[in-house]
Image (cartoon, rainbow, N blue to C red; front, side, top):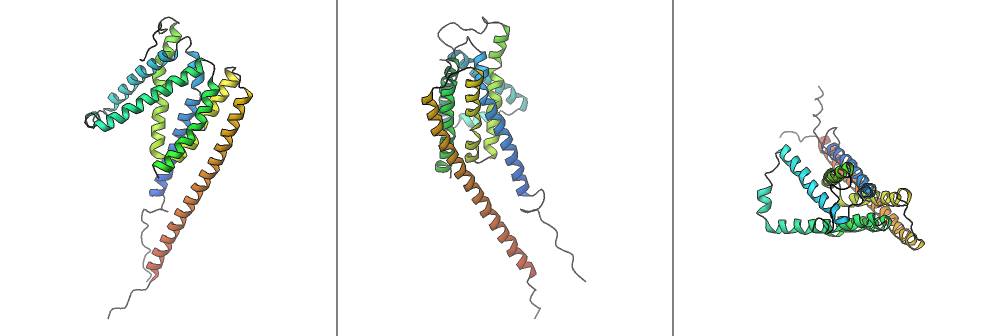
Length: 268
């Protein structure tokens, strides 16, 4: 009588196994990343609509209303248990503070670029951002309101609501980015970042009527060539890593199959 086949275990090749779950997470992370960087790429249109508010006033509203949105989300989810352990770690608090200051500086410069008709220059800077992110992934891992008058209540109800919406507009892509970064390698995140400067450049030139000089087009060309080479190298590395993992998985399956096929030693 032929013994029944051994039951399938939840392994690398089994439906719903660890590999399937990992692939699902990567797909979700990729979607979140595209959404986050797509929204950021359309920011020039939003900031241009906030005129006559200045860069520092917009920065203040972004910080204030984003804090309010995040506080509401945390209260609804009852996710406040991390606050006390966080405050008890001074080094972590210091690192987060430095990161917050750097982000505020980035926001101010970027909004200032849009409001002064230099979105294309900001886009050129953001084209360099993926290179830095990929380099980090490879090497390391493996005053709120302007001093002048505020326009919050002086430019109409629509303008006021646009400023209040800065919290949602800022928080949503940040949350999407955080969800993507937890599911994707940093190199992949760096490649997806290309979406943002492309959309920024298109918004600036096609929709906001900005003029790009020939000198800057040369700069864009040099950066694009570098990014193409970087993308090709990253894709080749990813494919090689996948092929190696597949080879090791197939070798493991072969070894287990041979172990099952070996006849048991007869009893003495």
